[in-house]
Length: 261
Image (cartoon, rainbow, N blue to C red):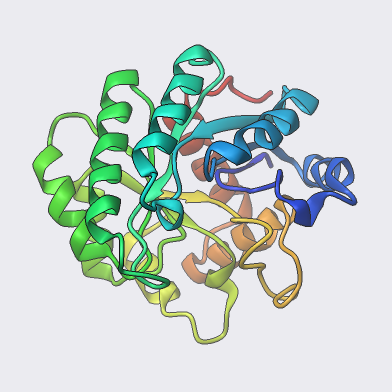
């Protein structure tokens, strides 16, 4: 069984004490590839340091996180784009972008503009788009409708919506990123996944956030991906090997990664 963590913030200071060990634990658990989404201009160096430390396992994405879209978002976006264009051979995706209306709605207009810019990057550079959609599905769908049926692809990261929202996301050509919340007792995701099936899923941790049971309340890490896969296999009554094979194939195809032997 080979796994891929499609969304992990391993470069954050939560891992400063044991970053290499955490990555090695993931590799030992057969999590062979880890995709790292960017946050802002200040996170680029630490993100790239991790990718340089484990070049066969860790791969960068570039974007401005929606909660970091502020008054200076154009300056941030220009900086990130310049870095990305100088390193396009390394970049595997545009992420994470999107809209977040949970923490603050002050910059909604700027978040919408930022998302549109990132969508155009995705199309221009032929890279998958990783969307953060906390309490903002309607706003994001409104924007995606403008770009429907022109080859846009990617992942709705940390999907937590309804079956109807999941169907819309699939219609837009996106996959669903499933992480630790699928293991939570009160999660409604199980019913959605029963209707969607495994073929449109990828696995993610969003580490250090949202750890799966039995690690809830502690730091998350990429080595916990098999726990998420195990829960999906239980929900769908298929083998964990099948979950691993399908989600890994989906991830390799989407990010244009080298097949894992």
